[in-house]
Length: 367
Image 1 (cartoon, rainbow, N blue to C red):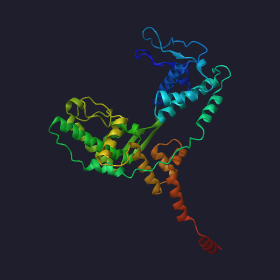
Image 2: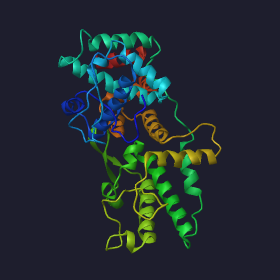
Image 3: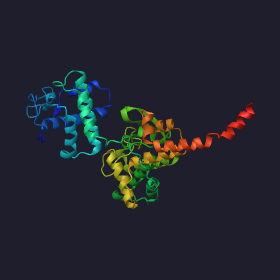
Image 4: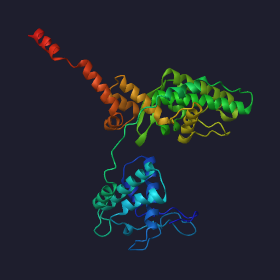
């Protein structure tokens, strides 16, 4: 069902109560809200309904009406399966978005069930069972991703690129963009940050490189400290000093230095201070890969995977890699990097496990 562009997005019943009852970060809550609005669109697109869909009287009115609320009476035992198919074939969403929206719908349905809001004799467990059966055996869990050995080539590309002449407005913008891109790839390599974490950084988070540490607010609003290497510190320092110098008084604080509340990395194609986005970071790295003629695309996440895999291969304990990456559970680290961890473990076993003869000599010495 196509909604008028001027109308509020439809919503599911008791959405605000559901969101208020779950303990998630603000970004996750926003994702859940959008996912369940999409779920409401799907429910309203179906023909099956045992009751009229109400208008939410508490929501801001548009043309005298609030958003349409998809009644729980529209839920059927196969709604999750149909929702997945609708996202895949009607909306043509990515598999990642499909999985995220489906997970939100499942949690919402479980919440309805525990509060006895489900219609008739439908249960969340039955709906999830039907979904699992429809999926069959195709879900095989996390597939090991090889690291991109071209990651260091991306860094070299920006390091060796000649700096544009800053005597013209265009040259200044290009110079700042190149220095920013150098700082970005060095920071990604040094810290293994997620693209979203990098895009969200403020100057105060790294104290303008006064400490060599960066305060990160990652998934679930959890904070951690990451250390920069000398190359990343130098790249950030040169970028910020050049940025403050070339932007002039109009864009700087009274002392000529940008405010600590400014984004660490900004766009240089406009006058006002605008933070970069995750899409910008992806474009920077992908464009460099294409310029170098690399066969495979390189993404920001490949920097994270490269540095974590390399450190594990060098013998860094799995628990330390978990802390470095900001994984809440070591199970996540073990799952994603199981192949490397197993190789390191095998190597350590071969190095430290005694042979029967060595064990015998030790026993004889102790006797």
